[in-house]
Image (cartoon, rainbow, N blue to C red; front, side, top):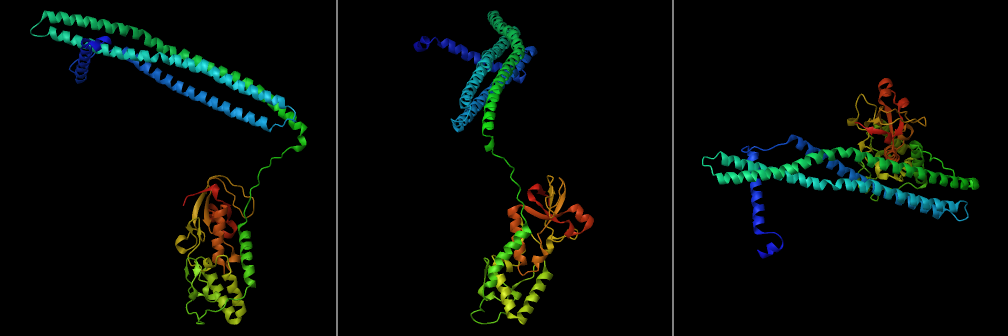
Length: 474
């Protein structure tokens, strides 16, 4: 007890505070349950709403202003490093070196002055403006507690007056407590009623002064910075005139267009050239004839038991059955008539860079879509139809084999085809290589849907176009 008294807090005061809290809690519960009326002041409640809104706006403005100052600081550092880089690359014997050093120094001073003035005239003023809100907020909360005390004293006094057995002593004491609570509440209420509207109206002048200061500082800063930039421009212009013969021309990088068919022919020609010089492969070790015309592949390696003459080893292509069958028949006839020609054909196909792909029976794919096959074609679509794309941007054709596209055009994508090469025994390999080139280079083959509907002439309407100018729709 003595310890409490030494700190200025007595047991009686603690008990009084606890009793007040209990009384306030009881009064609030009764008011929420509707068993006790509550004193309300709509005008003051509106002032409190305005106060909270003003505090929220001021806090946001302070946060954004600090972010702005941090950006100015970061821009200062970036500008400083850029000018330091200029000083390092500016050789001593070049004209205007002293001027560039002076410009860099003035640039640094200008940024520093701008940042400091923003802090003094905007941020510190903002902090002072917001510094008055915590005290007022605590007074509003205290005013609310005193209002509850006043309502509680009023209800207690009214209850004693309406009681059946009246105790004049208790009534007098209750009346005295009521007058005291009312006086305390009204004093705080009157002060806040005058102060809150005044604070609410002061926001206009504060916002005007703050943003005027920022605008004025920015205007002066940019004026001075413009002068420094003009001086630097003049110095560099003098340097350019003295070394005008050493100007570095800046040219746009030309677009590289891929000739898919030309690259394919060149690739297949280079693959088949060394094969023609090799001797024909020897027959199977056991000398037994090959009875099955089917060729199997496991992990892209030919099984020893399936090696045979090239004419029989070429299966019918799903997309070109007639041509493949015709090629097989011609190869078989050539083998019966002249064994040298058959050996040469087998050497050509066996020495290709993709030997397993030549004999695989699954169809080629373009960007993950199965190429060819009866299931992927429809009667109203061009042969080999894969999917639809829609042009997202205009594209101007730069060659005769390209499509001219406008944004919104629908293009029917079809496989790359070359009639001259498809008659060769490496037709399947050619299609797969074209698909690979297509994926690497980003070009597609197709025909505009409008041209196909009107003409139904694939050879005259088809062409290549860049894939990144389109978006797949089907």
